[in-house]
Image 1: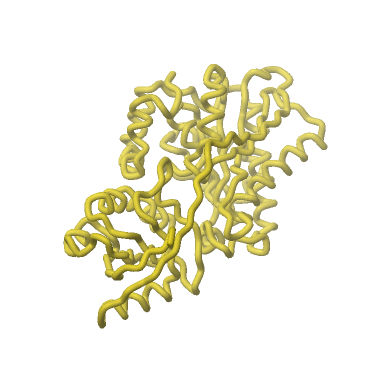
Image 2: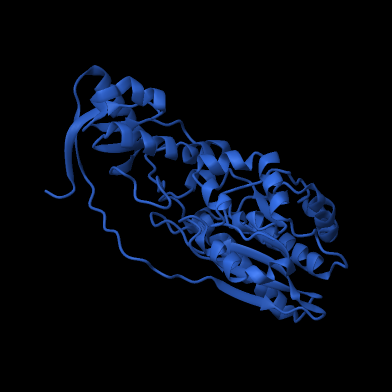
Length: 371
């Protein structure tokens, strides 16, 4: 019947090109078990994403019937892993728990294993979703904007509490605080809940495109997207010149110890199109320990949220917003296209973009807005 696959199971190791080459012609028509290591760090997370393109290319060469991807989470935990962002994967694919995957591997090592797999997906048409935008209008330079954002969409197995409901709620609550205080800074503070982040940062890409003529007046874009762990500082996204003015902006809450900034440039959340467009941008560095185990998983529920730490994060974020909006000088100038290209290469973000299949869209002008 439709959606039913009944085929030989083969252990394809970690699904590298070398693993596929070992299987050779035997991979055709088989269900391939793709092994993985437990996910402990953000490096592990990005490694899982960067293997997608080679894996997809291998399926187009070797033509397996389906892929079974071993869960990177333990204790039988299932989660969503988007194998392809901009297109449907060329073969059916499903996540299988670590415990079941390891058992299948042991059985396949001892003898012949067949699996029956039924995947019945439905793909709908285009859908237009909307960002949510609210302003606290500046009193002296309302055309200049300091933006704070978080994404409001999530995967469906859990409730999306850590990724990224808690930070969406934080953005709303920070706005509520400003409104209750009835204060207006020199510049406008803009609060944005982005949609479509999980599908490829489409909400923030849409924002950048819609506001392309106003980007010179975007002083900063500050994004939060890694749960409710302790905020230790900010990713400076390749711009060392941001460190001093950020510290000056949050000096009044120095005791909260959020000045351990890192120069790394990050890809994978809603700062992405702001980087490509030259706008100074920051991402909150939140402790990954409470976040990663539940990332995209059925365990991502509200009881996991660390409310105390998120309130501290909100306090730091609010002070930072006020400080940047009140400062006499801009945080930093907007970069030109050439400067953005140099930043991407100097931080090696270009390599990650190529591994994730994003580089051509930037090179062809489909992502980012050049100055």
